[in-house]
Image (cartoon, rainbow, N blue to C red):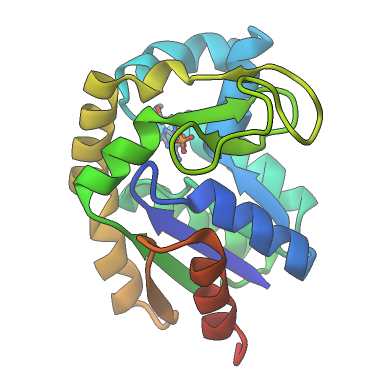
Length: 214
Ligand code: AMP
């Protein structure tokens, strides 16, 4: 199965994508995670991407498409794309990459939640820099504050989860990414819109039943 998860920052793409990847044996390809790792390792990509990420702006399409082409060539069996595509140019780029690989997308899942919920979720978000597990200081805290339950590493508050950056990320989402929903509606792909303002397991159950007939 090959699908795209679209949704604003904080809506739960990472959490839902990871659950789905695990249950369906898919690779989770999250451009944000790949970029953060590149920044941490100070690679050339990381150095180029960092300033955009710190401001909550999109990293240039050429860089993203190059990294996605390399990732997808390795994951032909099935993947869930989280955080990509982020604009129409990237969606067109993805169409070309998939054509070259002889692959099709099967579904687009759109996760929705109101802005005030998103801002609150993000302000409490803490993630594990080692294994990628995500917690929320308000709604889903780890057993020991600041420590990952899964792997014991320290949890971090993402630099771009500060409130002023979050507000810009939401503006960028509305302006650049939301038009993708229409783009995919206009294609032949099924687009499943899911209410993300519910407990994690309920959202996951809705996504799974939407995918079941596929
Ligand atoms: P995310 O973890 O998906 O919220 O992404 C964090 C940041 O990485 C974003 O605010 C962008 O600066 C950058 N980023 C992630 N994915 C993309 C993408 N597909 N295109 C451009 N920038 C991206």
